[in-house]
Length: 173
Image (cartoon, rainbow, N blue to C red; front, side):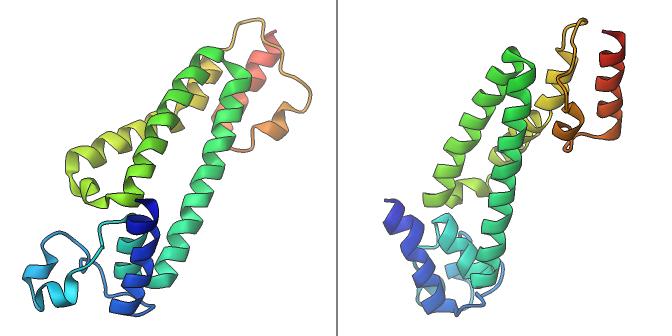
């Protein structure tokens, strides 16, 4: 299913719309009813990679993969940061990531589901909750917490106020 609806639609999109794509909306539900029918807009545009390639072309697919890689890399940094600070918050973060990864797998083969506003709101909230877990982990620190040497180097992804908070906790310990 991943090959048939995940990867093969990339070639279908290139054959049908060229390497620059056909523009936003050409692979959307109902597009076959406007200006050409199924001959122009029909095909396997329901896979995530195929839909991105059909609408935005190969440059758009490359940018989407780049953003995806950056998001996965940042998510990994969040998980390692949270895991080192709080076991309770780490369990929450791993559960949220599992939910997001499961939906990512669905996106590769059935992107039509992600046209529903409720699904997008739910996934946005879950992603926001996950990105907020470092703040929860910092708030979960015990009062006698002493940061390990070189903690400032590990805090590169936090805001200045959060770094100040960790430094204040370390001074009072």
